[in-house]
Length: 93
Image (cartoon, rainbow, N blue to C red; front, top):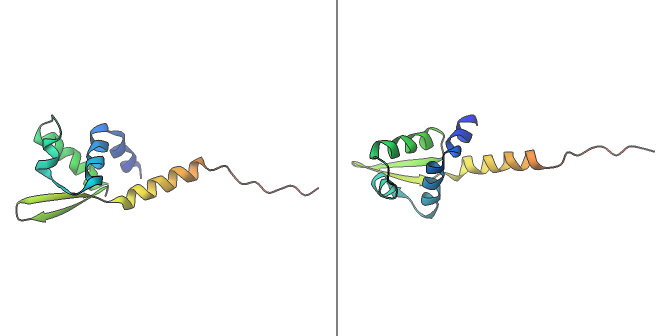
C-alpha cells in the first residue's frame, strides 16, 4: 500500500487519474494534456501501472490507459477505517 500512497502523492499522477476517470486515453492523448516531456509522462504512467492504479491495453503500437478503481476503493476503505471512531465496550454497572 505504501507504493500506492507514494503514487497518489504526486499532483501530476492525480491529474492523470482524474483524466482517466472520464474515459480511457492513449499515452499520446495523456501527454498532450501536460506541458511535460513524453519521457516524464511515461514515467508517471509507469508508476501508476506498477501500483495497479491504471490498466493498459496494447493495440498494435498504441497503449491505451484506463482507470483501475479497485485499488482506489481499497485506499478509501483504509482511510475510512482509520477515520472511524473506535468502538469500546460499555462498562457494566
